[in-house]
Length: 345
Image 1: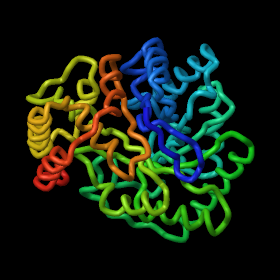
Image 2: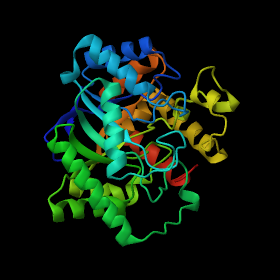
Image 3: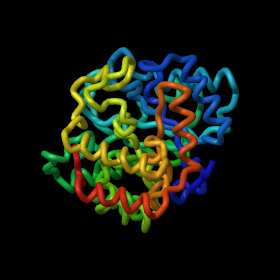
Image 4: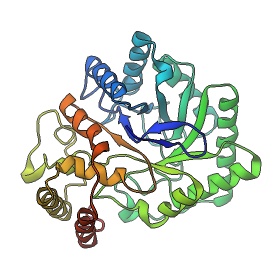
């Protein structure tokens, strides 16, 4: 396994991060425990979850993933072997604290305490803001993204959030803080205010990134490199699309697309790009999934690549991508497809 520093925290995290959001819906508790056992055996010490999980989210599965991680900690006693990340949800989910809330002092404290109880631990290594109060261009919302907000009100909220996180750090409940689904402006504003008020500095940003979704590169690449706020890439296989399992209308039983039918990634351009990426993998003798993950692994701004799996076979393939190095010829072919389909969904 390869390891990288989490921002400026001094914490070493595995390049492959174990995503957990299928546990409690697509995966059982026993299957989640098996995945954790195997991942840790392979040196994957960085695990990511959220209060909202399992996914696709529902009132019945809210918090289930954290509960499964908690029972594994209780069973194995190996909490200290894991760098654990979780998240407080942003506004808009009806079954979370009544739906009428935002990321602020009251909700951070409530969410964190509930997560700690479910996780059966007294601290979280990296606590992240799942998405901004003011909205986000993520989750395929960028086509109509038209931000409009009161900058001073947002700045006041950011300071409140940072002060609350600072309290939680001092209490020992969290060690580091991070962003998720944030923009370049939001990231820089958090860094500016943290420096100005001597408050916790954002260590990472968890945004979508894959061969089919490369919006991170335009502005956040520069910030990640210059400010040491590395990418934790979510959905590096585009919800499984890059495996090719959904081509020609296929919907394998138990897969995410079989559960969630309204998938906005399923466009003509995305499928055309996928077919060309599959051809590249065949041309160079690569496994398509491992090529897609290795691409994310090799990006200079990547701190960790969050992989998820519903089977042990998938998990083993995904983790093994850490040993795959893409040649300049492969990267050149990938870039040619990217130029044809820069934003395919």
